[in-house]
Image (cartoon, one colour):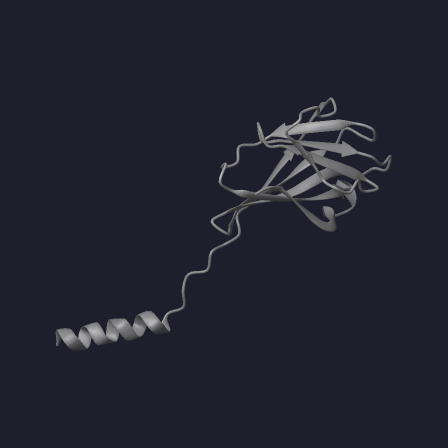
Length: 140
């Protein structure tokens, strides 16, 4: 009888699909208006886009977002943080202070994690956040 019970349990474990892992919730934060970043540990996106330029300071986990366009949209960085090859955290840092301004925010990422980001913009009253296609590695 025990053998039959174990056989049924083994068969059921094969038939029941695995549990899906949900993507982490988006962390959305307003960046604080500040000065241009000035650190030798700075890693900036290698392309300065029409609307935005993003830099990341690994010593301090600080994002700096520059709004380059005088439209009504806010400049942003959309980042994804990976640990052990899996998406661990994701979020957006938004500079809503207008064209010609730098804004920054501090985060706390694991040192052994990978961080990627896309530059973008968000015209909040008129739609969803948009990003440029290029994803830049900021920490690996």
